[in-house]
Image (cartoon, rainbow, N blue to C red; front, side, top):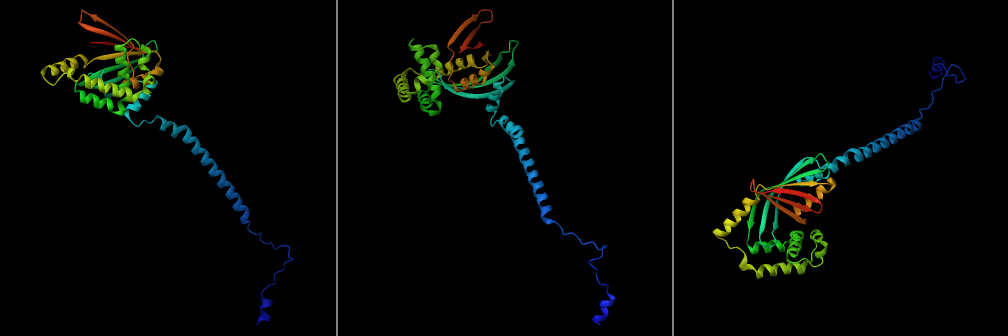
Length: 270
């Protein structure tokens, strides 16, 4: 039977020129090509991500501000129209404690390319309680405000403090404990002179509030780059007008004040 099959099935002739031997599939060559393409794709993706991060994501993240105050101060850097309100607590030569609501409005540039800033007093609360004043002084978060008021007090008491020194807090930081202790002693020694609660004190507070609420201070800033730092120092209560001039207009019974904050001029009418 087997011998018969070999005659039925034709024998393959390897020497036949018409026979084509199949070529082996080159898997290694194809894998190398795919690997190279994948590497190029990854490189392109990395370059694209780096470019996007540096030019879009990072730039946008730098422009994002966490608070309204931060946004406002960023706008102030370029004197862009912006508005912000804040309540600021400070002491007035350690005689009273005030909590004032201010509205800050950046009005852009004027014709002379100077930045215009408006500061309006919306509301104010006043306390003559020496214990509240001492509590404010001993609060470490108010250190710069306290030192600024201390320098101003010294300027009133003596001519030894130059006007340029009023805004240089470094002069007093080395003596922080001594100064805080001096102010506390000063307040305690003069407790009897502080207004007591009563009708007369309430009248004094109302008169003071009436003179301050609605007060508008218009500032002209020659160097727009100083706008943000000036606003920050005003909010922190660590910049003081070194030159103050007052005039009175008898026609409208209003007084005009010109305050010079180290070259930044602010005008107010009351």
